[in-house]
Image (tube, rainbow, N blue to C red; front, side):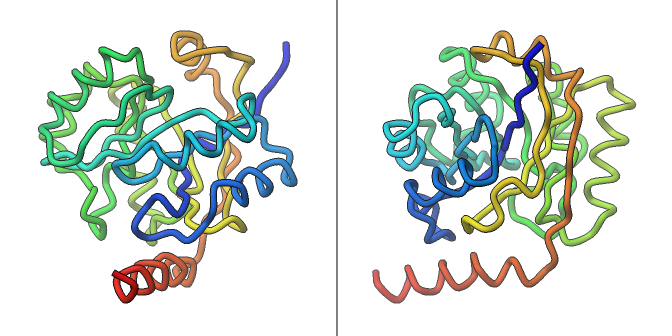
Length: 218
């Protein structure tokens, strides 16, 4: 059985807080031997589509979507989902496309995209996984709580680097049995083996710099 290394969570310059060109992200993933990279720009699939045109086998189109309660992390997205919808409407639109649905850094209280547990429990039956390790979570307790929550509720976990710069790509990947689409991903995800590495707080300066630079240009 072929095993694939998957980067579930990364960003390009199509996110407001990244300067990474899609072509540079593709180069980084190739150089590091990553088999599949899910590009999950904030409320946009533009960067993922541009990267997929460069390497259709490597790149899976994803999106990180800000809902009214927290962020949803999706893979195999065919139509872009706008920000600001309810979690239920966001999930409904993703399911219409057959997308694989996870939840970004659910217990990271330092981010706008974190979740209250009551809101997370409400959508839990409708999602395929939650993110149980995010390299950019500043406190280990945020990831630990997500992992414990997933175990208690018997929900699959994803892991991701949340890379906003090319050098971050692949810090956290999941090893999965080979799959060809969202349906097969759902079948293999619970057997996934995480390979994770924490990113120190200074990594956030990269995205802060990108945000400031873009604001000054606008």
